[in-house]
Image (tube, rainbow over all chains, first blue to last red; front, side, top):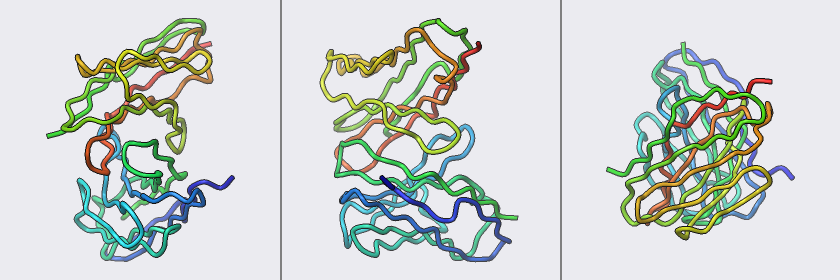
Length: 112
Length: 110
């Protein structure tokens, strides 16, 4: 039972470098999400994909791009990393609106 | 602006105690309220509530939603050290966005 799988688990980047966080789910869910979690801020939505072929901005999209590659995979790209993007990133998926979302194990990203 | 507020921010109890965690929400077109437990890593799903006044129960954990007063509570009875975690609540609305509170950090002492 893999559920939602994220890679990598840890990453250190230098300011200005780029990277892509990968996420895949095997639950045949329609909707996928990227959140960041910072101390005292809770989980904040970066981007989401309601269904294959669609993506939309969340609460904090600046500095990020996403791709819904197929129904299973949803990637998050940082084009030019900044220290303010140091955070723990979670991918999640759900059957649709209003239903429970299931989370991946997270990626701890540090930008120096 | 949609928001979810949890209280208390943190709580320290002894094993065997009963705790009540609070979650209030102001969300346009509210649909459901979800509770998650977060230990070191990913939030894990506990409950989803959509109807007012109907208690959801799983072992020592239970939760209820009051749609008139716009809040939910999560009760944990006979707490154990394994219950130590951050408990998150989230509300869903007419969009695909889950609005999370900042969580309640529970520490259970042996």
